[in-house]
Image (cartoon, rainbow, N blue to C red; front, side, top):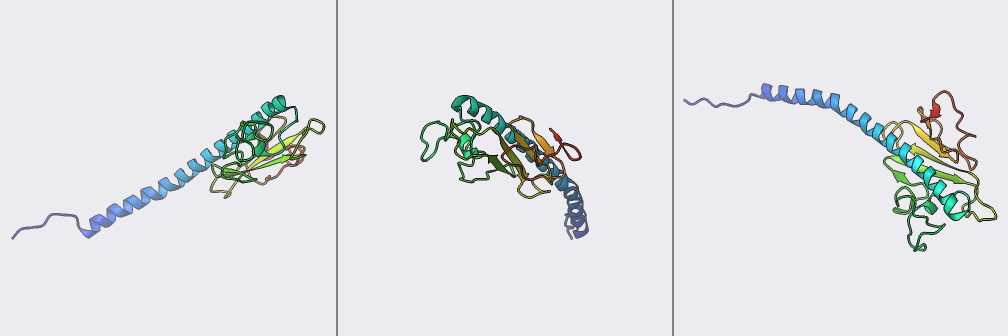
Amino acid sequence: MSRQHGFSLIELLIVVAIILVIAAIAIPNLLRAKAAANEAAAANSIAQVAQSNIVYVSTYSLGYAGTIAQLGPPSGACAVPSSGCADLLDSVLSGINPVNLTPLKNGYQFTYYAVSAAPTSATPNGAFAVVGTPVVAGVNGTSTFCNDQRLVTLRDTLGTQTTADDTGCAATWPIGGSIGPL
């Protein structure tokens, strides 16, 4: 009689249980690392918007951009770089492609605030603010970010501050507690 060699059902179940224990340890760490990466990307995106606005001011003499799309690349009705499409931000962050007034990038939604959506040399925008909030708080990230004409990225580690106004971050982002410069 020949004897068959192989794994018993108990041995296979033990291997599966070990794999499940390893996965239970690794997956939460992976999700935390992804959320941390999303937060770092959001802080960088907020700073890019602020830096793009500085270039916009010096190039077009209209103050700060009226919309985040005005900082984006040429598209549709705006065929060449101009004050309506300055080509200073990528198409995703500026909300050009896909079209979105509050663009989504790396799990964060970006909201832009300015006094006038169509600034002129007679009535330039003297301030702006951009706020980044996680699309799904606790999954995409926990912190929210704000930057304005002061060029300081503020971070709310609790994620409770989610808006600003057309004068900048200062009115709604008091420094202290969970809020501070990045």
